[in-house]
Length: 464
Ligand code: SF4
Image: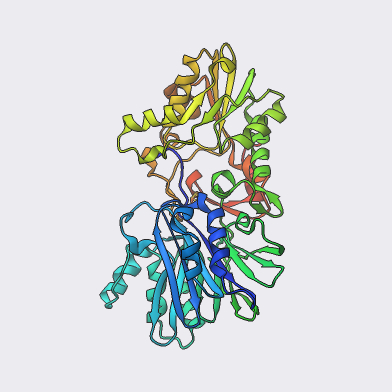
């Protein structure tokens, strides 16, 4: 059990310009930059003519791949995936990209970020029809639907499959002829395309994957958009189905890397703005602001800038301890929190402190922090969160525990303050959050609002 949310994955696809036969090197670089989206396993599939070469394993990108392996992954078309999962961890077949050999069309490889919400019923139906699944991953459903579609062309089959799938998906699909990049009709999960100076086309979950490349153009795929790029670099674009925009708010709050861009603005700066609005909405007189590293830092800076209260990095993250949620028992997890976050006591002694973090899940970490700060002599300890209260699970690919485990589902901010040992607890309002984000619709199901229409939300909800 963990006290931070986890994304399900990151995806990358590359079609090299004619001079270069190593798309896999760029995919590797992209996956390395998307490591924060999944640390459990990674894979790269490369198309070498009509054949494929691939390498997948458990672990981190730079442990799985080395120069020798990458050199074997020759080809001008390659795609890759980093994975985080909640179930079937031990099953190597779940590591993506998933591969299928279709009698009429040859090899097809698929990398998926998201979650199919009608997966159970589709899987049951497909199994009853004789489909044999190799993995426990919902992503395999795409391949079975494509394989069994009665349509003639591969693209028609692909659209036929998408038509039957509900939920969230950003997809990169490759074969020997090219790459498809697809975003679901609501646009839950991000997906970008970059044109590189040498003519290479690259797709990735976040713009940070294009780092250090000579990019001449980056564009976000529209919701419901399907792009196909062939080996000559020709791009075919089409919107196959468009619904209300429901982009995941947690990409801004926590998932996306701070240097990733949305509407030409870095996630870091969006987070700073969240901190400013948070300070506006829930100011309290204090001597010091302390961010919870690393995700609370930009919002704490924004909070400090708006409120004029100085910021100190009194909490330091130890980089030599594993993730707290891996610990099997609650006691061990609590111990891990203490070891993971180190407090510089003399900075906070006899001070009124505001701790700023991005979100509150179960409250395990926050409770330990309150204890640590009081033990070191803080006079007051307030908690400010740069997201609204989490009250419901996510059905679109983010591992949020069920409502009963979410502290905000049960208690008001005042009750949470009492329970966890703070003088006060306050959250950023939903209206406050979307007021600083790009003008589109968002998903806020985990905050208790299925569709967040930005303008309506700003009017309806509290903004001080
Ligand atoms: S429910 Fe929450 S975490 Fe899931 S997609 Fe919607 S905003 Fe993102």
